[in-house]
Length: 186
Image 1 (cartoon, rainbow, N blue to C red):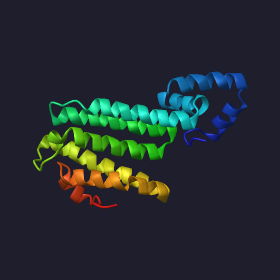
Image 2: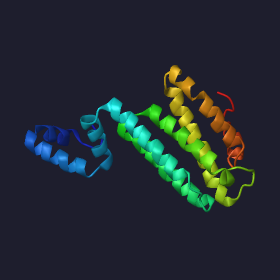
Image 3: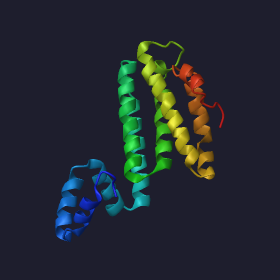
Image 4: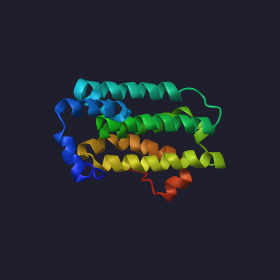
């Protein structure tokens, strides 16, 4: 049980009649969107079918939101963060670590490919620093997630990770990629 609930309160909650507990539970769930989405996914959706469907929907959303030209690095960064947040939310709802790694890499590669004019080159301004650092730190997070996966899954990411690494070293993120020692080969 959660640590912020005293033993006495826990005992009393467990002693409540089932109908009263159910009413309270439904009221609590309705206030937490993440919990509501997790329960809907777990109880109402066929995990294998909907997992692939959710990944594909996110992939399509990334394609649709990165194909347009942004009128500055700040607009690009805002969109990047919003899409990355959706990828992380997907993992929180489904527990899909493989999907989180796959979609994060896809997101970063798509941005680098479609927004090359804003992201490539060595010119670093104060506006470029946050997005450059974001790419590197989130790549490190993806690498940590991949490291925890089974070795067979890890091998599937090698080509994309090498491509992502090449983009990091040939973009505004170069300084941070070197500083955080992003591997060049996987």
